[in-house]
Image (cartoon, rainbow, N blue to C red; front, side, top):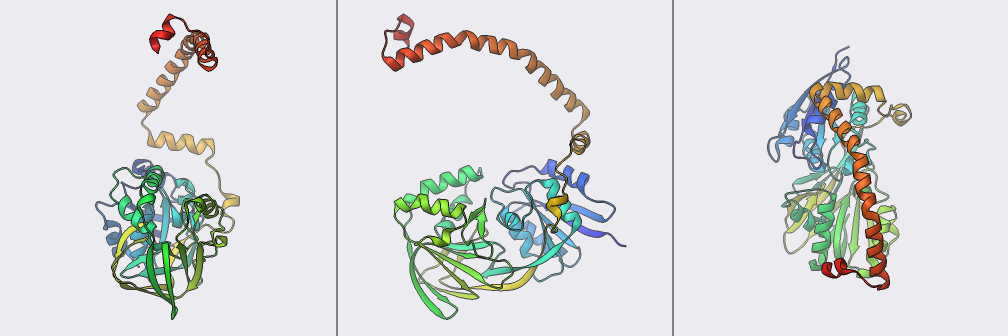
Amino acid sequence: MSKRKIAYIINPHSGIGKKNIIEGEIEHFTNKDEVDYQIIYTEYAGHAHEISASLRDKVDIVVAVGGDGTVNEVGRGLIGSQTALGIIPCGSGNGLARELDIPLRSQHAIEIINESITKQIDVIKIGDSYSLNVAGIGFDAYISHKFAKVKTRGPLQYMNLIAREYPKYKSREYVLDIDSHIFQRKAFFISFANSTQWGNNVHIAPGAMMDDGLIDVCIVSEFPNYAIPTLLVQLLSQNIDANKYDEIIKAKEIDLCNKRAMLGHADGEPIRIPPHAKVSILPLALKVVVPSNDFFESVRFAPAEDIKKFIQQTIPLQNIQDIHNRVINNIQDIPNIVKDNLQDIPNIVRKNIQNTFGLGSNKDDKEEK
């Protein structure tokens, strides 16, 4: 039996950036008896799409190693082909990976790729762009354009950006023709969902399915500040559809009919959308690698011997010895550190009592003040 051909496309600048470790894990955990593989690094924006498009129908699986942007680029290049999209999630949101139950631990993601179980999912087309997960207009699109300019990326930076920009953002008027029905809405944002979530288990469309041939149009109208805590809780608890400020309509096709061009996003990546644009579904257009039904029952969660073997193969012996020496030295220093801290405790307690109850202070305390 011939071996399966797999290409790993690694974005070295993805959200949590661990390219050297990933390459070692691919080498160690790939089933080489059944798989021939190659590793290719992206060098610039859009390169992942170019690589995957050049490999379509030439290999069995192309694996996106990176965040949602890399997954989108790689997946777009495989739409309508017999080559499947695999994912090793290395981003900050990992929306599609979470939706497909791909483990965030690289070893287990690679084991799923070894098994090569696949299914077909829908793809959303929005204007000239494609979304595998969730696309949108409004506040989330506005944030995606701002976030693309941030040098250091991650969940914390994303939340800081939202907190800074939210007070300045104003809801906008939108006109949508949804399956030949006209909707005029003043919305904070509108999401076009193929899956249930943006990422990080934040669920904007709890009832969405990736293989039903439908788009979940999620219209979040303007809301008062006091509604924010409830909205956030419902996004995380998967019942945002119960909120009165959220309206979800299932559709096959949407025409955006607006006066001005719009900022948009596709899987969190910024795009620009013309005033009149079509949002449509491509049914079962992409083959993806998913866990088998019994994968999580049979998976081995990194036994100690596997970890030891992996460390020995990926970290030079001299480095291991250096780590050992540092640990020993730090352990030897612990008694002195504890002793020094214990000597300070009476003074710290005394000063806290004096400050709390307004008791008299000595000369040193007055000088500090």
